[in-house]
Image (tube, helix red, strand yellow):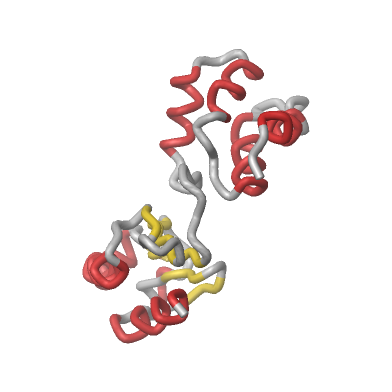
Length: 152
Ligand code: FES
């Protein structure tokens, strides 16, 4: 669970690095499952940069989550090759099925659906990942199966 002391300890481990902000943010997300707003002033103070700067980095990188994730995380590739292979329709389909938008978690807290930008599987696009397991050649039927698996 979150505590200021715990967050500070996690962050401080990287204070010796040259460009510590990204490693710090990754460590926070790894430890707490997301990057809470409370960590922004902490980082700003420690690194002697503005809160706006920290906030800018957190929001720029899609990897950082602002809310805790659901039990399962479904990532849909939204980069070019997957888009060209029908990714837009699949993203719409997933949003419709789950009743939430990309970047959100279902009301029951079971599934978080997020965009990801290229999984390195462009040749077998469109691609997705469920809880770290990569799925290639996605289509509506396979997406439904993934969603069912995540919801079960
Ligand atoms: Fe989707 Fe590369 S664009 S895997």
